[in-house]
Amino acid sequence: MDSLIGLALGFVASFFGLLLGRVAIFSFLRLLGIFDIIEERRCHVYVLWGKVVGIIDEPGLHILPFKLGPRAFLVTLLGERRILDLRLDQRYLRSQPVNSEEGAPMGVGVWYEMFVCDPVSYLFKNTDPRGSLAANVSNATIRTLSNMPLADMLEERHRMSQLVRTEVSEKSREWGYALGSVYIRKVHFRDPEMMRQIEAKVVNRLRQVTSAIRQDGANQVNIITNTADRQAAIAFAQAQAIRPHIVGQALQKINADPEISDALFEILETQKILVSKAALTIVPEGQPLLTQLIAGEKK
Image 1 (cartoon, helix red, strand yellow):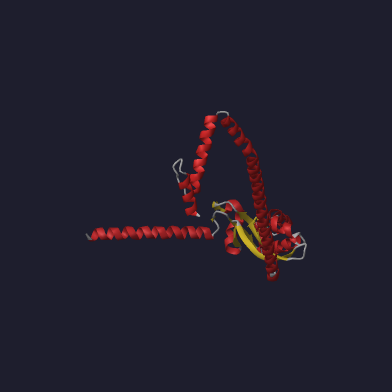
Image 2: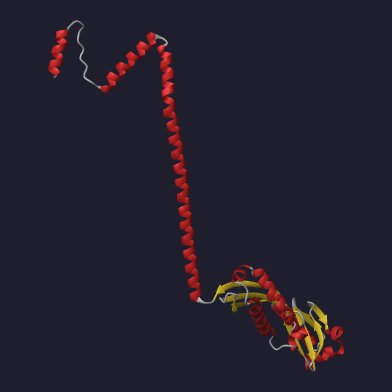
């Protein structure tokens, strides 16, 4: 049992010893400049005695003597290795002051991308390429977008973005910092009082347009109503004019047969008496005295 425990402890100790030894050996070889590992979208610049002796920007494991020659053994000891990030970077400049052609104080927000395109120029031609590029973009925005018509400034953002990018790109490459996409993201008024005045004008204009629409709708309704009334009056007048003619033709046909005519008028007379709700007194035939008495009683 004790032998098994000793064997296990020996195996564990050997494993960690080999692991630490491997790490120590590779670290020592890397310190001597035998090899170097380049990560994705990274660039290593090797400087010896103030001069650039090599640039490696391809990811992977690289044997430095094959890339730098005998100077690879001196770079890590007497020189320096600078690591640059080649990934795409982004920045947003808020409310750059620009005046329109009409004199309105405007603020322009500029969003742009940049990346390192020349490591040597980036390291040695400018101490602050990022800040210089931001200042260059700001100056280009003010210089190219000033005195533009207010309507174009509020609508044509794509053309404004192209103008700013064209103005900045050549300058940025001199410092090893390439400018990518540029987009005018926001255009706004910088004077609060002017904003309130514009808002009041817009509200008044909307009220005028709303009143005009309502009045036009009321006028259209009145026109439709008057037209309908006129057409209805014409139709009723035509009907009243045609009615006597139609009734006369019907009576003419009825009078052609005396029996039908007498029966019709008798029915009409009876119907009128019933509709009128008048008091009706029936007197037997051949009784004139009774008729006189009834008439005197009613009086």
